[in-house]
Image: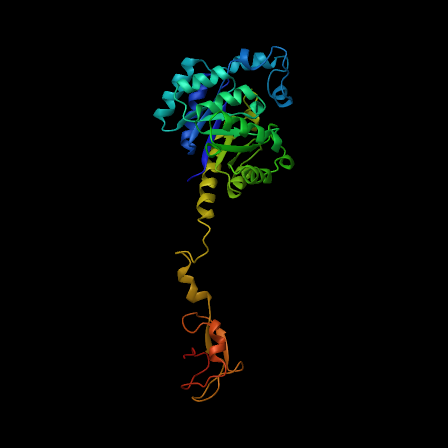
Length: 333
């Protein structure tokens, strides 16, 4: 099963439908499996006095409240319909994170095949129960969370009706961009071992190295922000990949998938032809007469590896030569 690659368009559309459609285009061209948006109502998501995160303050109008910022980034029902249709036209899956219970219901009514739980909702028990009751596959980000909080969320989802086998837990750090020293990618492995769940990684680091490494460590899902231009005004653009970078990440992930293989150690088809070239056979180090003993002084191992393997050394040493040999001639038994 291939790694599921999610292009996180998120709110990088800046409330502009045409920009959202262009994000779908570049996600499809890059080879992503899904393009993900965010479904929410500012009224239901935040109070008017809720502060912005530091990174949001740095990348948006500093005088603007979080509520006002979110209001500008909402997607209407009509916009959802348009984006779903555009995804179908571009042969890429539409996906969205619902940040409140009515938004989850809206996505369910649109035929959502899976649900994404954002990091901030991991301690929202009514929300978790609502998601779990759908019984659909769940992708659960865990930024800012401890193992205990992940365990509690998983238990809530299971109790609501979604088996653990339907849940993929994403390791995540919610700082935009995430400092490399704070990534702690091995925590993804720890999550999988602790809870026996499929794991993935939602990345907010600059560049493409960390998601590629996550695939090598066993990530089944990679989520990465996509923008048309990192210089655009908006909360997430600066921690996103531009189209060429996203394409390079997808290509690298697919190469890593091929390179990981099936884990069975055996000669590959491409290297089989090198065995007689690189391995060795037993040969005479000097002329040997018929009836003379083979000894370490007159037998050695040299390339090519086409005849008697040096692993049969003990069968040869101490036996009598059945015929004459010249220097470097391959030994026979």
